Picture 1 (tube, rainbow, N blue to C red):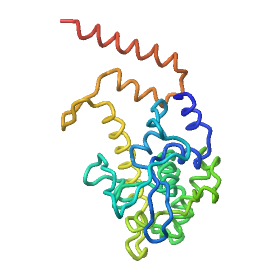
Picture 2: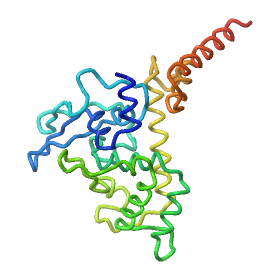
Picture 3: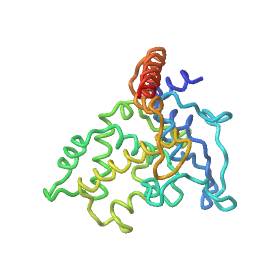
Picture 4: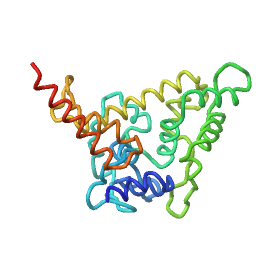
Length: 250
């Protein structure tokens, strides 16, 4: 099952990856329709090879959730988590998912160039409409963007920047401008938080001085290395042996 899920991460369309790793189907009280959403943990799992989906949940299998009658799932996020910029609940819609993937998979320099392309008056800022174009052109250069096709049959259509994130970037009336510096700061915060969530997956005793073992740190590094599983196992054995021997030295 782990190898199957790794193939989904590597080769499937964003629509299928989202539908496989998302765990919630959230009821919209205004439209009485359900929207598929990810938790931040779902998102990290969707991009981390080797991390198994919870039992009983998979492609088009979700927990139904009604915000009117249930509390939002408890998210292990800091008070100032970047995910709360996506909305009060910290949940991730399909459009948010596409944006986050684009942000994580694109070098800073590419965003700097894209901002310059659509910065028509040369002040280094873009408005909400221009940012949609920046996102689209950058996304089309990524492997994820090349595989993406809107799927109206599943409801997974990229609707652009979510209203909560638009408010964060451009203010409640969408009149503010977004500087490339502010956007790159958002990218850096997102990268750090993804690493934090991944780190905490291995922590056995949470706290300000929490640590993980050498082998677990190696596993985090190897998760994205694209190496065969048997080679990863051999490398992790060497790490374990090396630090075991090291700890025996006086």
